[in-house]
Image (cartoon, rainbow, N blue to C red):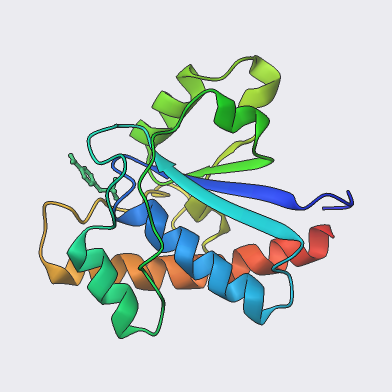
Length: 164
Ligand code: 4NP
């Protein structure tokens, strides 16, 4: 992160109403706490377009609100080829997102921007780097996603700070 322009991070999941919005809101909060809000920009999107224009899933919003985050500004959008030009780091939530995002890459070089989000999770098993999709499950899934996202974003902020 040595350039003078802000470093651009984008999160990608399937619907952009649960996992990537959680990471988006948590990373923005952590960057503000770390004094890095003007050095790193954050966006998120989904590979599927079903929820484009919608707010977060109400269960995601309520889980975030319960831990003191503001879920109200989110508007779901669909990942597109333009996100490659507009991002320095593209962090995907599962291997299906990874395959869909890589398929849209304009070049092999641009594919280097894509990483699994949980590569930064200090507690992750390297053989299991997915953030499980909580959409079909109960409220425990949303709580688990938030805990996973919070510790991963803590490590990600340190990575971004050291890269500066
Ligand atoms: P997300 O969860 O990818 O974490 O936002 C999902 C939300 C919606 C759907 C699937 C996953 N859906 O099929 O509509």
